[in-house]
Length: 451
Length: 159
Image (cartoon, rainbow over all chains, first blue to last red; front, side, top):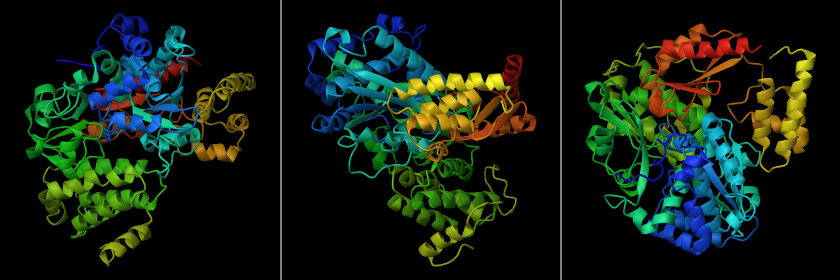
């Protein structure tokens, strides 16, 4: 089966420039700089119909358009390597095993969009990937693939590698700029959009690691070729990350448009230990928890959105029949409470409210109207949160209420966990929380206090 | 790390000064400077933070304001080994709580500290943890503890 980003990762010393070049590495950059105009590179990306792999699926070529018309110098490429979405690890694998592919992709993006400075912002916890990318950059400079007058073509570009320090929000495209500028990683209002007023106030192109890593093959083989690698109307290939209760967890680079059933059963070996599948998530923590009868969903941006959730980073998490969906939702709720940056209150308080409500469900002390409360709090967060973190944070929770109502009824009304996972001990959660905030929020929504 | 002999501390400040100088030549290196402080002192040692703040042309309070946003920085001395155990969904489904339990039982202030952390991006190796900079995955609780213990032993050998 055709592979693009993960084609070289099993080669010995795949991260070294010698291995990379022995397998066609930097040929695309040479081709672009010597045979193609920036517009021609852009045209191939347009023909590829690639959607950004950071999670939103925004057409890459259109994002590039914004840069071409933007005024201000220098222009920056900012590679978002802050991969922190739970269930997602494809960027890490590229950084660890094929860092030169990313470097080449960054240089191609800079050439096509008229940028002279590249930043790669990698999350702080990726120690090995950081080391490998750092070495790749040094090697690329030494061989003249970066720096002044690249390969004697007159094109010049600088590449800097920067490390984050533990903050999920810094994967958000405006927060990552604040973080890089040496500020707290709060999101910024848009407009102004990064393409006009981005990093250090200059035009900035922000692309994900996987998006950039596809560029060399698009340049070498053409956008049309890449686009036709997809199935079910999907464009190109996509790296699906599979984890949880499967036989073979891992990163699978497959045609965009592969169904969840094919991914989980044909590629990841099916549910582990011969168990039945109970629930799954298509795209990391920010996506819904879906029931088994939705396995034929086509895993592409549009079809997943039509089904009411997001493909996001395509971090698929599989849960077997011993899983309790309340317990699973609580994990995601705890994640978002921890990672909310606290900048806006619907997210800061809402993530805590959802986590507290689930904690009460899990203890068997939830009020009878808890499912309504979750629904209301979720809708408020989706509508009122400042950035995507808070807008998507309720999805794993509210989706379990909608998709698995019987489980909630058993917990809330029957005081029983059908999977036998939750403690259901009747203990009031030992919370260090501002109960007034919670009550005020809920009073405002429901006209009555939390029972 | 907490009570360094004077000459060790002096060498650390000197090494940090060189790192800060290298950072200051490039744009966007605030977090890298803080990482350098932590690399040399094990935590954000106040005088070292002051050196970074001076290089950046901001106050120490401003720099602390930035540093406190990020979970990887420590504000007090730590044991030589930090075990960061992922407790998110993929690891939770494959036994993260058992690992957490095992390590918390064994942790001591002079050997290692356990942190519950959010997704480490090691989901295909779940349950996973970071032992200092080493990624450890697909392990039982006792195997996880052995990995941590090995780093603790290595750190005490180095002293």
